[in-house]
Image 1 (cartoon, rainbow, N blue to C red):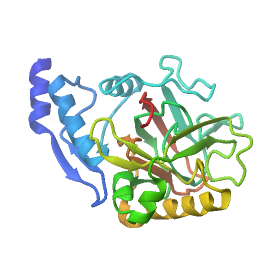
Image 2: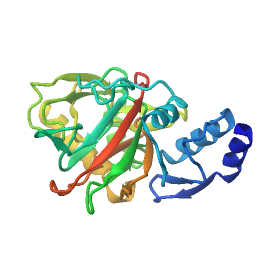
Image 3: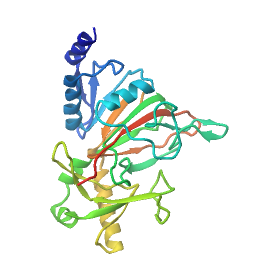
Image 4: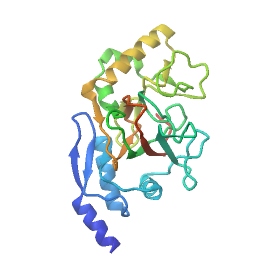
Amino acid sequence: MATTTLRMQADSFGLRPLAPALGAEILGIDLRDPIDDALKQTFLDAWHRHLVLLLRNQTLDEDAQVRFAESFGVPAKVTSGRAFSVKHPSVMLVSNIREDGKPIGALPDGEMHFHTDQCHQETPAKATLLYAIEIPSKGGNTLFANAYAAYETLPEDIRQRIAGRRALNAYTSDTMLRSANYDDAKSSYWHPVVRTHPATGRKALYVNRLMTREIEGLPRDESDALLQKLFDHQEQPKLVYEHVWRPGDILMWDNRCTLHARSDFSAGERRLLRRVTILGEKPV
C-alpha cells in the first residue's frame, strides 16, 4: 500500500510558479505520507530551481513536519536557549500568543527586516520549513528575495568592489529591525559577501539589512554606504515574492540563495506558526 501511495504521489506531483522572481507551489502531495528517494529528488529539483516551495492545505503535527525536514538533512536544534517542544529540540514556535503575559513563541510582534536564518553562525541553516497554524486576517506576510538575481543584476563596478570580501553578520538584542549599534551582539560571524551555492554552483549576494554590519577592509563610512546600496538593490519589488499565509500552508526556503522578511500585523490578532531549520554548511 505504501509503495502504491508513493507512486500516486509522484505521478500527481504538480508545480505552479508563484512569482517571476522566485517561488513555486507544489500540488498533489500530502506530507503526512512518506517520501521515497524518487519523490525526494523531485522536491530537490524543484527547490533548487524555484528557491521557495509552498504546499497548501497540509495537516501536520510536529512529528510529520520534522519527518519531512529530515528528508533533506539534519534538523538544527533551537539555539535560543528555550524549549518549544518536549519531543523535538528542532521545533520552534513563532507566535504572538501570550500565556500569563509571556509569548509562547519567538519573534512575536510586528515587522521584521530582510535576513537569512542563522547567518550570524559559522554554519547557518540551509533550509527553513515554516508551517502556518493560526494567521491574522491581514498582514504578517512573509516576503522572499532572490539572492541569485540580486547578485546577477548588480552593476559590474559594484561586483568588483565586493569580490572576495567578507561581511560581519551579528545577532543583537534587536531581533526584528536593524539597530544602529551591535556592540551587544550575542553571536556574530564573518561570511563571504557573495557565496556559492554548493548544489547549483550559482553565486548569491549574501548580505542582509537586519544582521549584516560591515564589509571587511573598508572604512566604516564606505562600508555603510555600500551595504545600503546592496540592501536596496536586493529588496527591489521585481526580485521579491510576498506570501500571504493561510492556515495549513508550509513553506520551505533555501537560506543560501534567498532572504526573507515579515510585514507588520495587528498585535490584537493571534499568529502561530511552527518552524524547523535544517543544518547547513559554512558559506564559501
